Image (cartoon, rainbow, N blue to C red):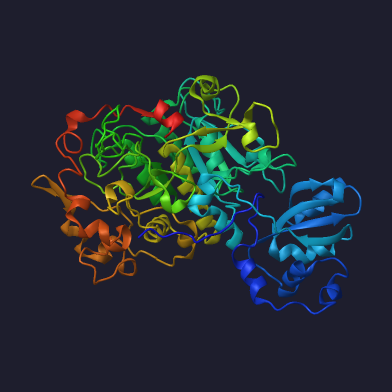
Length: 582
C-alpha cells in the first residue's frame, strides 16, 4: 500500500500555516477566559492568536494579519525580518500586512509597539510546487522550522547565476558563498547554460521573486536558506569531461570545512562503460563520500527502450530500459535518484516518469535507484541569456506569469521556468539531506542514506506491482526521514544482485543483515537480510519483482559492454524529453 502524508493544506506564503503541530495546540488548548490575552498584550489579539500566545507554541510556523500604525518604515521592516517574519501581502486598504513567522516569535511580534492588532490568517491555500509538496519539505518547515541554514551544498553543474532567490530572504546576503570553474578554456563560473541555476533553485531557492502583493504562488527550494557552492564543470551546452567533474569534486573535498560542504549534487553523468571499481568518476564520488560528504546523483533519463509509444508495451507504451543507470549513479556508495511525475496533484497517485533510468547497474548489477523523488515539470530558477533561455522560445518551457501572479497579460516569467528529468529529482533529495544535516550535523553520509531509504514510502505501479529496479527503496518522505533514528553500523552500500540463468535475485551476501545496513536497519525475521525493510515486502516476495526475464533483460542492456558508450564525457540531458517532460 502507498503511504500518504495525510491531508494537509499548504499555505501561499513561505511558512505553512498551522496545519500540523500548531493546529494541534489550538485544538487542545481551552478557550482563554475574557481578558486573558489582554493581560500580556492588551487588545492586540483575536481569540485564536490569543490561544497561541497563551500556549507559548515553540514549534512550527504561524500566519497572522497584523494591523499597523501607518506605513511600515524600513526600521520596522528590519524588526520584522529579525523575527523571521515574511510579509506575504500588503493590505493597505485595511492598514495591515499578512505575515508568516516562526510560532515561537509570536509573543515578540505582539510586543512590537507599531503592531496594533493580530488576527489569525485562516484563509490558507496550497501554493508550493510539486517538489515541495510531494517530498514533504513544506511539512518539514512547518513542524521543525528547518531551512537548511548553514549547510553548504556544492552544485557541480553548469554554474549558477546571482539571482534574488539565491540570497537570504531574512538578511539579504548572497547564499552562493563560493564560485569555482573547471571548464577548460575559461575561468568564468557563470551559468551560460541555465541548467545549474535551475538545479540550485530546487535545492535552495528562497522564493523572493514570487513573494509579493501580486503573487498567488511562491516557488521555494527544498532547503530555502542553505548555502550554495557553485562548482562549474559543464559548458554552455551542458557538456563537460570526466576530468573536469573529478577536479570539481577534488576541490569540494579540499574546501569542505571552509564552506561547510555537507552535500554534493551531481545532476549529470555518462553511460556506464566499466565497473564502478575502475570508473574514475565513481572513484571520485567515493572519496567525497568517505570524506564525510553526502553525494546525490541523478539516475539518468534513459528509462525508455523506444522513441515511439506502442499500445500494450510496458512503461506506458515506451518499453522499460532496465540497466540504464548512468555513472556515477551506479556507484553503491552514492544516493541515486529516479524521477516521479504528478498525475492529478495528489501524491498518492504520482507515478514514475517513463524516462527515469532503471537498475540494476550495467556490469556490476548494483540495485539502483536508491530512492525516487519529484522530477517532472519542475518550476525553478530561470537564468537570462543562456542556452536554455534561447531554446525556450521553441521548447515551450516558459512559465506564464499569470500562473502565479494577479495579471491578465500573456507574458512569460523572467524569473522561473520548467524543466524535467532526474536532474530535477536529484536536487530534491540533496535538499532533503541538507535539512537532515541542519537538524543533526553529526549525521554521517551512511546514516543519511539509510534513513532516507528506510523511511521512504514503498511504491508500486497503479496495479500494485513492486519493482525495486524502478522505485528503489521508495518515494522520498522528508518528515519520515527526519523522524528516523536508524543508525547503520556498516557502510550503507546499495546491494548487489546475483545473476544466474538469465535472472537476477538478491545475492547471498545479503543474508547477513548487519553486513549491509547494521542490525538496527533490518528485522532478523526477514528472509532476505532486511531487504523488505528497505524495498518493501512486495519487492522481494515476488519473482517478477527482480528475477523475471521480462522485467530485467540482460543480454545487451545490462551485461554486454558493447552496448556501452565512451566514458570520456559527462553530460546533462538537454533532450526534448528532459526539457518538456510528460
